[in-house]
Length: 149
Image 1 (cartoon, rainbow, N blue to C red):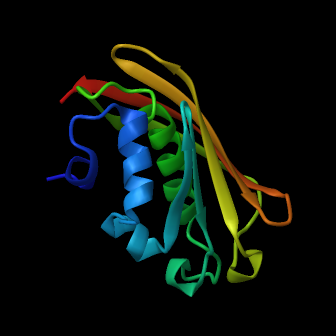
Image 2: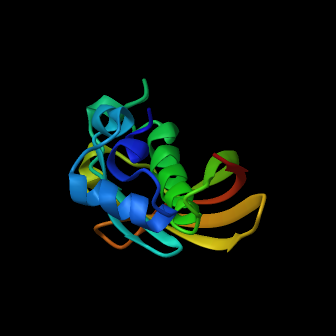
């Protein structure tokens, strides 16, 4: 069973995500990458993470997948927050632009996603990954498939 169903079965998307936040529970991926889901409103979601060596590639910088995961999570949950109790979603496409290298010295990163439009079969979102220094480290656009549960 999904974590969302365990904490908020039968609720609309925004209520599900708010219940998840209130529960303090995190999916396994959040534990593995040490990222946190911290805010949600209708059409908006925010994730944070402090990159460390657990996310390094062999070159000694944070793997692009770390930034992509933060951005994908923010985009996905922004769309999720606009769904009914009978809908679910999955990412169809994620386009990430990397603007600046990330290392453990970068510190706290904040990914804020916004749903641009949510229709019956598809949702579109964008997200920005910004450091505590105010610099843009990565950005993304996402297309999400909306389906019946």
